[in-house]
Amino acid sequence: MYKDLKNKITIVTGGAGGLGSDIVQEFCNNGSTVIIADNDELKSKKLEEKIKSKNQKAETYKLDVRNDKDIKFMCTY
Image (tube, rainbow, N blue to C red):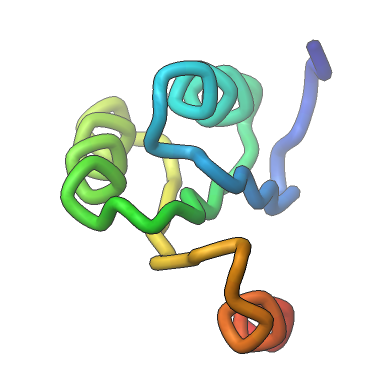
C-alpha cells in the first residue's frame, strides 16, 4: 500500500466492518488520518478507540451510503 500518508485524510466507507476495518488500520499505519464512515456507530467508536490507543488519528462519522443527505453532508464535513 502507500508508504507515506502523513497529513492526508482518508475516508473509508464501511470502515467498521471486517475488510473495512483492515483498510482503516492499514491507512492509519501509513500515517493517514482516517474517517471511519459507517452506519454502525458502536463498531466505529470501538475501532476509533483502538486506533487512538496506538497514537494514530481517526474519527467516526455515521453514514448510510444509501442516503443522499448523508453523502452530501459528509462531503461538507
